[in-house]
Image (cartoon, rainbow, N blue to C red):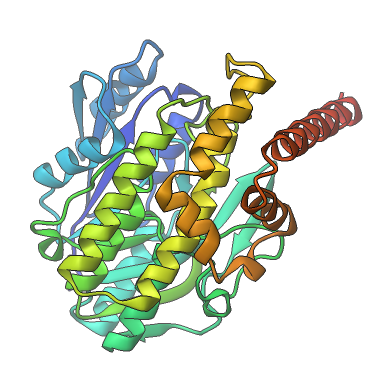
Length: 362
């Protein structure tokens, strides 16, 4: 087990500002038995050139250049090429601790056959915030009950908040595929689907297929939250992305006969998705419509059967931050104009806060 080979898969798109830091952290790993698969999705910035430069410097790196696709197809292409016993996923604007792979190797060697390894991480947003996922020491998840609890947490972090150790005031998630490793044979037939929340769906199937999951309470990955990412850009297609994910979750529940707990968890997730759609479309400053048009769009969203059901049935509302709870209450009361006014006020406060921060550091 000491000669475990890791395949590190990194989708790359318009990340020239951060890519070198990411790749430096990968090729500088203290554990050397790696292959690095970079899937470059076009773009007019220097990301493709940077990928090629690193491939010339380090023979462990392979680069695939292709026309623009989504992150799911990029990762799937990487999975098709991977030859390592274990697969590690990374995003091109993040970076790893130097001993990331060594810690993965030690855990695998210590336990023997491991299907999934999950570790802690850092959130990078101006400051560095360490995230402790679970309130346990190193933990082997192997019973069906434990696996189901992990799936429910992946489905919606608000379903069982006591399951998380957490970070006060920040939303954490066990559904991401980075900050861990997967046994490649486990992933046979499991693929990424869709362009939003694809990590969580992938993890649902991977956990279902797994026999042994190990949680290691050690932060080894740096997750960068920046306003340039796809999560913060105006995206009128966000509705369709979440509906695709919703249908895939329903298909998963039917296939594996998941019952009431999963229906509740999905309702919580759908309610939370309303906030994401608001931020990415209706209340985004790049939205072309005026107040009346936005109000009609919000009304149409809230009255869609699946979202109306989610708002009516969500039982985890007490676990949401105060701002989200207020939005849910207003939507249930059909106070759509009030939601827009609240969103506009919040955005103004953030802009003022940003200017004040710049003035202090200027």
